[in-house]
Amino acid sequence: MKILKMCCLYFFICLNLWLVYPAKADRLITDLSNNKIIVHSNFTGTHIFLFGSVDYSNTKQKNMENDIIIVLRGPSEEFIIRRKDNIAGIWINAEHRNVTKIPAYYALFSSRDFNEIATTETLKKYNIGLNYKSVNVKPQFVSQLAEDNNTYNFQEAFLRLQKDNGRYHRQPNSITKVNDTLFHVRINLPNDVPKGEYFVDTYLFRKGVLINRSEQKISIEKSGVQKLLFFISRQHPLLYGVVSLIISLSVGILIGVVFARRKH
Image (cartoon, rainbow, N blue to C red; front, side):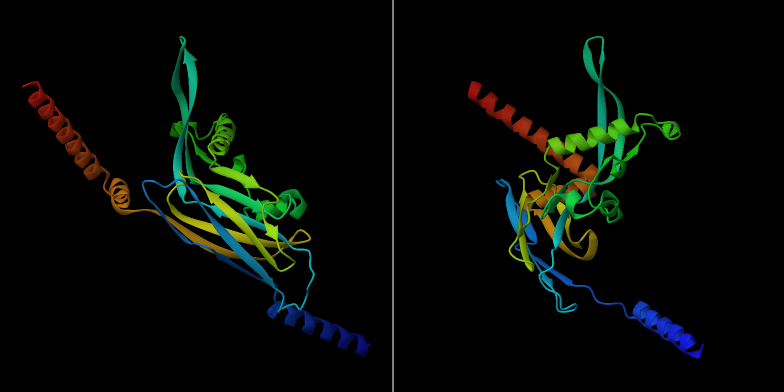
């Protein structure tokens, strides 16, 4: 009986030690070829490389079958999505919805097909991937909050439009694994990439289980006068509108004076 009690006590001590001092997972180390991109007036798009490695020094394991998923999330923005209706032979804007707190740019990369890396439930748990439930849609009027049967249609339409515009895309089998330790991926950014701060999250999976993750940041900024005008338009919209109006009127008057002189 005493031996049984001692075994139980030893078991609980080991269990508590394991809970307090859990085993360290394999480290995931990543870096970017460039974490700051300046957009000039002649910007035609660019690309960056993400390099990564798996450090096995904590677990002393090697030759493990690793799976990698990389998520590129752009700055959150608000959108308005409108539905056009044909009224008396004329297509006009009808119902609309506001889409809030959604990345303006979203890209997925993986070392093999996503469904081979982890289950759909596991990917949802770590917010990997976008579906219609990720789209936060607000009705046109507050009175429609209780009953909004068209929400799903607007959610699906928004995702479809973002994919068609190249703002949302997924690229399975795009990550190159050099060996069981090293990997890299090329991330292409189009010429109309939204400006702001981007997050690059790298996930290390093994047999469908998340082992570790790392995060990098990318800053995409406008340059010179473009940056100044963009800042003023966002922070001081009234001032931006007044200055734009004054400039437009001045240019119009100047063109009128030039043509008047040419006639004489």
